[in-house]
Image 1 (cartoon, rainbow, N blue to C red):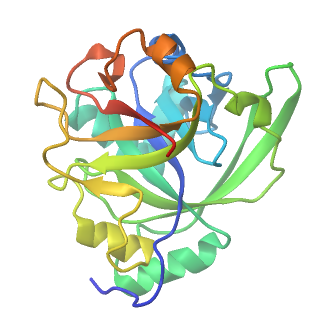
Image 2 (image 1 turned 60 degrees about the vertical axis):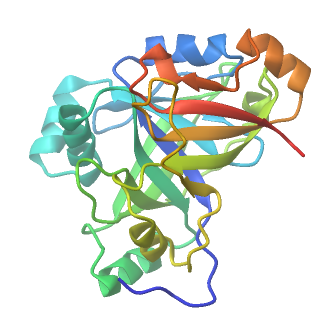
Amino acid sequence: MTFESGLEGREVDHVVLAVDSLDEARRWFENFGFLVAPDALHPFGTANACIFLADGCYVELLAVGDAEAYERALREGATFVRHDASVRADRAMPCLSGIALRSEDAAADRDRLVAKGLSEGDLFDFGRDFQQPDGTRGRVSFSLAFAQSGPAEPLLFFCQPTGDRPDRSVLTRHPNGACGLAGIVLDPERLSPGKLDAVRGGTYDHSPFRFDPSDQTPQGDARSGLVFSVAQSEAAAHSYGDSATRHSILGSGAGPFLIFEDIP
């Protein structure tokens, strides 16, 4: 793998958390004071519910929504579905299954991955309907360029919006004060820092990525997680219900954990 000297690593667009049930995941995140967008169905069978943040990042909760469409996409070799299925077969849910990097030109990012020997094939273009909290509906579309990944790794890919960009500001006003994704804690045994840098196009600038084997839940079995910036500490403390800053997703102990940090 080669690194591109002098370039900053690409920013995070969103992270994907694979879950068994969107209803269960929604309840858990809402109990922690997050506002979760309405469910949406992808044409290839997965369904999501997103947590949008004021800094432009978001967390995508992902489940199987249409088993027939999912199996059809799997038979057709759709990269996103193939990786999702391998994750569900290999790992306990919930888990950090994907990291989308921001792109203004997915085709150029795909070509760069091809040149590095890191591409996972052709661009993937799709669109889906969405619904705002006030009931208005619209459609968004994307172009994705995937990097190669194993079933144990989070899927790294570039995401370029190609259609309308809805105003999601009302969905970023979380009762717990969360306003940004400050960090992503990664297990270096599942994704190496070198591969991350090679895909992102930077030189050892891991921010907001953190590779620290000591970042584990008290159970000692989760080594990946999300760090949220919090602007209203009193509201956040009320939502958490205790003085702890680290919580295991869905209380499983094995899934990614959440950390909340006050904005300096």
